[in-house]
Amino acid sequence: MLIFLDTIDLKAIEKFVQLGIVDGITTNPSLFLHATQAPIKIIKEIIHMFPHGIINVEITEQDHDKAYIQAVKIRELGNNVVVKIPAHDMYLPLIAQLIKKQIPINITLVFSVSQAVLMGKMGVQYISPFVGRLYDNGFDGIEILKNIIQSFALYGFSTKVLAASLRTIDQVNKAIELGVASVTLAPSLLEEICCNQLTEQGIQKFAQDWQAQKENLFI
Ligand code: E4P
Image 1 (cartoon, rainbow, N blue to C red):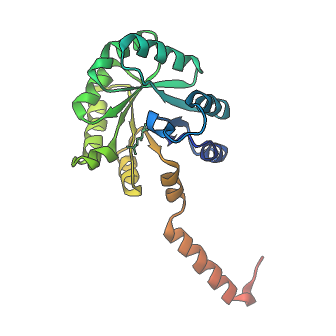
Image 2: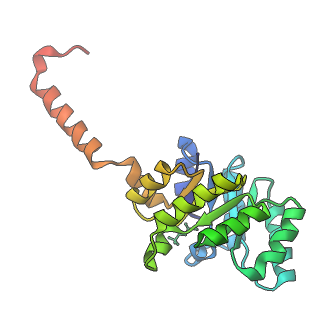
Image 3: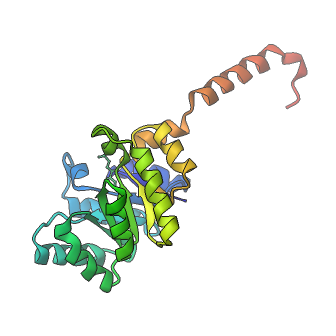
């Protein structure tokens, strides 16, 4: 199971890469909104910091030729770079072209089973259903994720499902219980998973009890 960090925050990336918890990074154009450096500079820094990670960078062009050039340039940033492309029909010829060129693709902004199945059939490496945004729009995100995972298993697609836009620990738990191939998590959500309240309370209780029985110290 792969864990991606959904961020361009270099400090967070450094922290979790050093801990060996994450397998890669996902980025999207919105994450660069308040960046203080040029996106390309940040992307190169991420690739440099995480040479063995799978780094996802999204295209922003909509015109076919420009999007093709951009996708190729993104891939040329490194052998570990995956090109993110939205699941929109305007990009279908581009996706087909990039598959022929054996450029790894992550189809982003996936919101339905049929959309996911079409992409799986085309043979992309990853598809990213946006679980949180499905809930934002009144759909059952985990149910749709489940149906995507089941249909991929049924049809034998090699495409990995990457659960994205996960907002709560409960959603992450449910995605894992479904056996999802990969998840992407914002650093704050990953921090939250690492700091379970009951673990915290348990440590405090053990420490109190240990202090209360000084007679029996064995270390
Ligand atoms: C994943 O690739 C996306 O960048 C991310 O999960 C989107 O999450 P959001 O819906 O919270 O913006």
